Image (cartoon, rainbow, N blue to C red; front, side, top):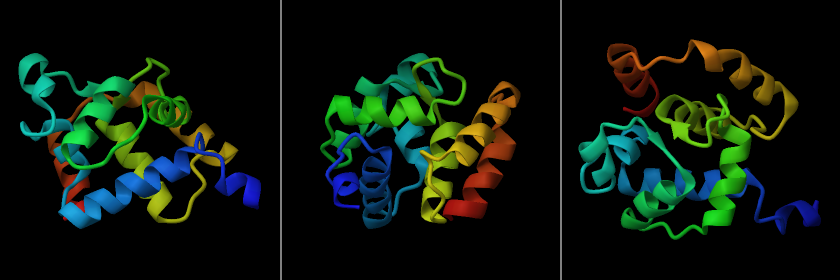
Length: 136
């Protein structure tokens, strides 16, 4: 309803904005994490995860202004392993679901990501095939 549309802490609004940016700039989720122009800290640390401040910074460089409170609210819902950061798998899964019209704030999606969280290890080959499959 109208109350929902006004709720800026709804992660779906943030995902809409990120999705529009990726489409407009022909970017993939991988670019947010790995592209040196957007995420210099990846080169420095090799860190596969972004905290709220980093998400704001990286997306800001890509041309999307988001507030840290909005991003934090999104991350609470999408951070499957509960470490306060989003990894590329968590981010990609949420965007994929969102694009398909799945409510990422809903119980079904939340259960699914929590169940998958412990199995998540960075497997570059698998991730790249996932990107190609979904974002190429």
